[in-house]
Length: 245
Image 1 (cartoon, rainbow, N blue to C red):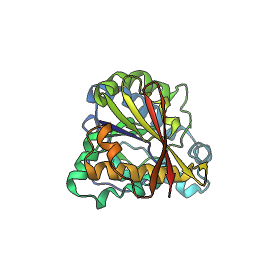
Image 2 (cartoon, rainbow, N blue to C red; image 1 turned 90 degrees about the vertical axis):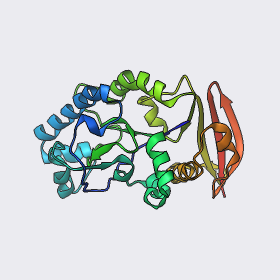
Image 3 (cartoon, helix red, strand yellow; image 1 turned 120 degrees about the horizontal axis):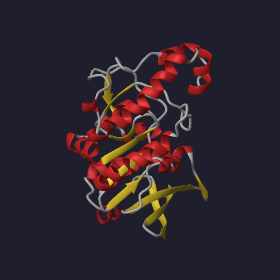
């Protein structure tokens, strides 16, 4: 069983691992595809003004824009699971987990980067800025990764998947050949959006702590703060409607 996870726009800075290279990424046979997008991104950085990048990044402070304008080629990297710093990753608390739980995440979680495409949690990436939905010149990045990585992902994920991504990231990869569990989180009768990421992180935390191997095992555990309300099934997808309690 594998787990799919969205990235976060906010990142932790720094790093002490090797710079951008094939050895940093899963699916090394597809590194040239990642490199193709990487080079387009690098060209955008070098050819755009600070003001243009301010709009592209979605950043108002020009000092923040300058931080991300430089090339990524020489920037130190760190594991993707530690690089991202959004609500889901805060809730996961990766660094507080025991080594076995961390190893479980490293081997079984795929994170979908807007720039680098599908990553193992342990893949090494630099600090970068890429607003969700931003468009690179003359290419649809989501479709590019969908077209080039779907076959490899199908082989990797196997028969069962837990999908903790927001819907946008189905543009990078849509699970068609595996049984999928996904989630909706309800508070006071309404579907929550921002806090959904927090509970996705908590779901992943419990999966990792319990070293869940399949859907049957997952359905037997309790997630603190959540209560199963309903199960909706459509084709290969089982959606768990979870009440926040």
